Length: 261
Image (cartoon, rainbow, N blue to C red):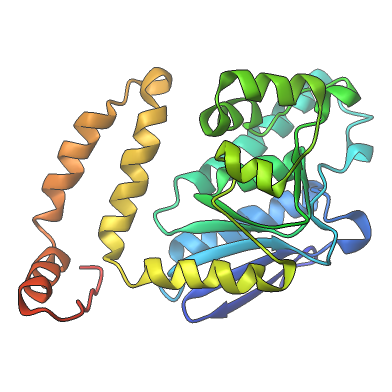
C-alpha cells in the first residue's frame, strides 16, 4: 500500500515505520503524502487504538528532510511545503488516540519535528536530536520553532536552533524532550508496553486529556482557554458509560472494562 512506509497492526497498536534506510529515512514529499494517509487511518480505523512511529534500520529515526527537493523551490513553494507539514503534524498532535515516537537513532530537522508532534517520545540510548536548519540557511518549517520551546523552554530551544547542536538521548530526557531512554533492543517493547497500559484506560477520557493539554498551548493562537476547556470536557465525561463503569469497578475493587462509550 505504501512505498516509503511499512505498517503493522497488532493488539490495537498501529506500528508505522519510515522505510527509507538508504536515505536515513529522510522526509521527502512522498513520505509526507503517505504519512498523511496513514494518519487518516489512525483517525478512522476502529481497530486502531494507538500508534507508534519509528524509523527503519539501526541508525536513524528520521535524519531530516530530503534537502535535494529544496533547491528548486520558490518562496511560494516553500510556503506551501511548510503549510502541508504543519497540517500533517498538527493532525498527529490533535489525534484523539495516543501517538508515540520510538526514536531509534538520528532525529534531526523534520525528524525531530515529527517526533515532537507525537504525544510523547521514547528514545534508544544512541538517539540524537537536533534542529540544524540554520546550517542550510533555513529554519525549522514543520512546527519545530514552536514545539521545541514548549518542551524544553525558550532559552534552551533558542540555543539548540541557533547553534544547530545535536543532543543525546539522556540530555534530551533531562530537558523534557524525551520521556524514557532504553537500549536499542528494548525500544519498541518499551513503547508498546506504555501504549498497552494507556489502552487499558478509558479511551474517551484519554482523548479529552489530549484535547485539554493541547488547549493550554492554543490560547494565544486562537483564544482557547485551557481551564475552560477542562471544565467542558470534565462535564462531558458524566454523559459516558465509561465513567459509570470506572466508578463501579473502583467501588467493587475490580478492573474496569471500558468500551469507549
